[in-house]
Image (cartoon, rainbow, N blue to C red; front, side, top):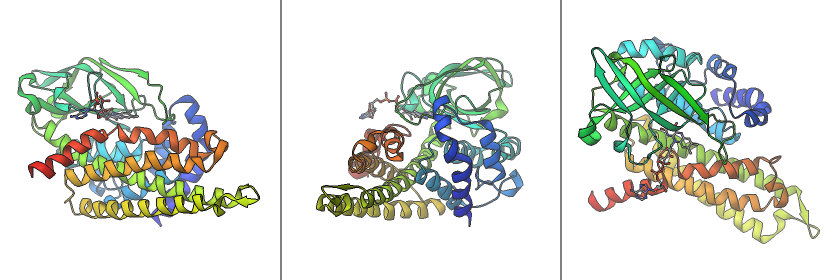
Length: 369
Ligand SMILES: Cc1cc2nc3c(=O)[nH]c(=O)nc-3n(C[C@H](O)[C@H](O)[C@H](O)COP(=O)(O)OP(=O)(O)OC[C@H]3O[C@@H](n4cnc5c(N)ncnc54)[C@H](O)[C@@H]3O)c2cc1C
């Protein structure tokens, strides 16, 4: 029932308007409030903090349905699966009461600020500083590629509280964007994900109470590593759902289109290629489902998550390209969802940890135990 409701919401509130949002580069705030009303934001937040109190499987359903519909504009996953998830896992009772109800209703939109112009893969090298001044931090720095950058009301921000301490000098601080000294930069013009407001963010002498810090001072890197596994699984879930949808579109199209007096679906090349893709996608689906089970039990480790992200995003990039080929010239026009799926896929091998960083994580386990 929840899946049907999510699918209906996407079909009526997102798909018809997605093309318009792609032109302006951002989805309307109103959509967030509607999604909140429909129970599609932060489904796993418990009732005491204003949420529906469901489990992670509900987050999975939303991500799958967005992936299936090619609805890449609304960044509900960063909001629900990352920002709310950090607050839920590491926040105090007071912090949860303060921020989560608004995130569930869609009044408050969340962003995650890890990446900086100087680099994203090496989180411990970040340069944004948070210096203590009485019972406040004073934050100076810059972030880039931040999803929900134009819309966000709060940012879970990775800062250096001790620049000499490497990974142990990183802390996570929740910064409300209404604070003086916070500024949104330009919305980045991207290859795909055209309706997403990926942006630069600037922090100049932003004063934030120490009470806004999540967890202990210096524990930010550890918390981010823990949560990145979750983020990578969600990316994998979205990738598999997208691959499944792309296969469906390909089968339908090749069953209707003719060349040389035959349906494209009747050529052996089509049948073999689609058969091979179906088997590959089924294979990763089973692995990702297993990872979801582990995540529900809180047993998903960073290597499993890295494997899931790497294999699904590589599969998505290469195989969407192969499916697009069956659409001929139509596949190259933005009137067809397959063209969007093609340009939107490329980022999966970069964002949330690149494929190379995933290989690094996996090889550490393989060689170093
Ligand atoms: C559309 C989009 C949305 C994003 N949303 C967010 C967001 O909401 N919040 C946020 O904080 N970030 C976000 N990001 C940033 C994203 O997570 C980073 O782009 C990613 O982590 C890579 O960092 P980088 O771009 O700085 O590349 P770099 O770290 O500069 O890496 C460049 C290249 O070097 C390779 N490389 C790096 N280290 C190694 C290594 N040890 N071994 C081998 N190769 C290596 C990388 O694989 C990559 O190919 C987003 C990015 C995009 C494109």
